[in-house]
Amino acid sequence: MKIKENLYNQRIISIDALRGITIFVMIFVNELASVKNVPQWMKHMPADADAMTFVDLVFPSFLFIVGMSVPFAFNARLLKGDSPKTIWTHTLKRALALVIIGVFMVNAEYGYDASKMLITPAFWGLLAYSMPIPIWNKYPKDFSVWLKYILQYGAILVLVALYFLYIQDTGERGMTPKWWGILGLIGWAYFFTVVYYWLVNGKLWAMIAFLVFCVIANSINLTEGHVLHQLPGFSFIAGHLTHAALVSAGIVISLLFFDRKKEVKINWAVLGFIVLFFAVGFFLRPYYGISKIKGTPSWTMLSAGICTVLFYFLYWLMELKKQTKWSDFFMPAAANPLLIYILPGVIYYFNQAFNIHIIPEYLREGVPGIIWSLVFSTIMLLVMKICNKFKIQLHL
Image (cartoon, rainbow, N blue to C red; front, side, top):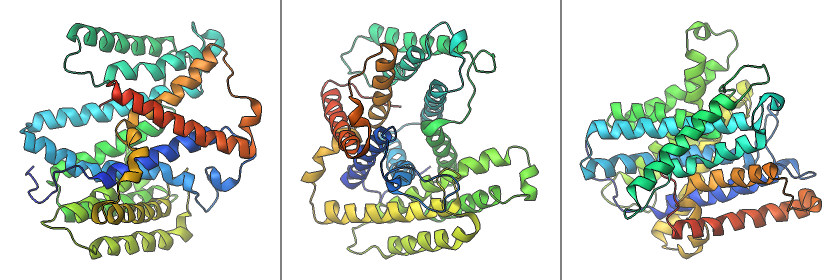
């Protein structure tokens, strides 16, 4: 792969802002999911509903941002002089780590036989959520090498032990990927898209072609009785290409914005893609409906359109108008996205394991529950600010 000479090499603060806002909303809606008596528009729409809420936009926003960051990540490594082997190794490790963490999280939720496990499911979940922190923490350069290895390899051994301590509700020992979890789905989408991006040298036209291919594969996968369903592995690959479409959409928009010699006041190509995303989404809606749970192509394309609109606004506000101070609130999360995703689960299973009940019941229902969810999200951002200060940052 060649270095993209025209790709901006400085940090794009509007991408960080979109990431931080997405994470804040994610923490809010995850906390809100356990609150009773809240409006449907503040929760995921059911699988059979032909509709989506802002909650159904959080996951695709993550995927879109992953895609937007890919060209910068590859360019930075090429400029640093990393070999293809180093880049490939890093890519595979990152994808594998996301899949592993995702599978552990899913198995912590359900599918176990508590009566046959040597440790309680709550304590198992606490360890499953906690161990990625010492494994993938970005340790300071002056940190003891031996202590680092003890923490990392010790945590790996704990995860291996957790696999064998897990007893499924069928009586079998060991975990299964019931589904891959949010992080696992991101890992697979990242893997398929980045491998293709590398093979085509990050060419814009090739990424657009891949986006079209992903949408077609997704549509075929949801078409009952299609002959391609008989191909081994087709449903598995096409299912993940559903989410790869959003990653590739992020790459396309990123290249259209930043792989150029100078800034433009109006990016007509991006505006054209916004129209195209919405047009394809609404065109496919009568055939597949809008469903985040089913992963329909209409949901994918409408999400890509909304994400592009949101980013264009942030780009105009922050890169062109230089209005950036307001985003300081969200930046701690943008700098440490994996840790802030994991930490609420650590807190949840810690409280379960030790039977701690801090939040009163009246904060788990209605308006008080909504307010508490906002307060909790804000607290998590402040916690991330402290973690960042003390160099507790996860880096895959």
